[in-house]
Image (cartoon, rainbow, N blue to C red; front, side, top):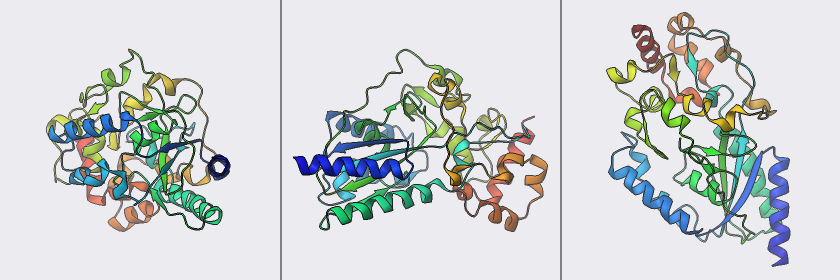
Length: 312
């Protein structure tokens, strides 16, 4: 028991040293709430809310053992990405998650160093890194590890950081001491539901991707966006932050990230419609090279920008 307590303490200290803002541990297979989250995912899929994101159907999401054989513990980490700065031009809106460098790589590099540290402490242990592109119920395990609760907008909310938080997980075959799972405390608040322009949050915790601006601007590969989406886009051309902007947990004083790689790129803060439409594919790829926004192809940027222009 003492060995697992000592190792848990060391792993958590290492995670904070790496710059993570929220750190927690869950035991596998988790509490009954993990089963409830799995059941909720199945209902969500059966309703077709994943739109064309077929990867959401991966069976690995429902069984963490598929991710790492013999997994015993999950280290969940949160990295604050909020910066107290605004874009200067107001004719284009870009979700905050894409303002800095690609957060997947930032988190992976930090978790890799934690995994290597774990190897030195326990040479026979196995570990696996998971970010939000992995087939893991990342929000459910973050909640299980106590670093935040799933809000009605389906994002993880931390009482000190709010919901501007990237998630990462390190799966381990070591037995670690688990934290208490987070308890949802959104109460009767439904500001995120009321503010969604397309009513994509059809009920608390249920986001229908078919109606979501973020899905259509980031994932939709059709030449034209649906008219009902265009009519509600406002200036959003890459993701959408509305449900987070109105959240009371993000309205109070929250810290600005000091992570160098998450500071806003100059081109993001100064981008205008006119400039964006004048850029060649090469220019787009050059700017997007180290950004999480590179999943949006140059032609999609033009499609999205022309859509908001035609909506005026």
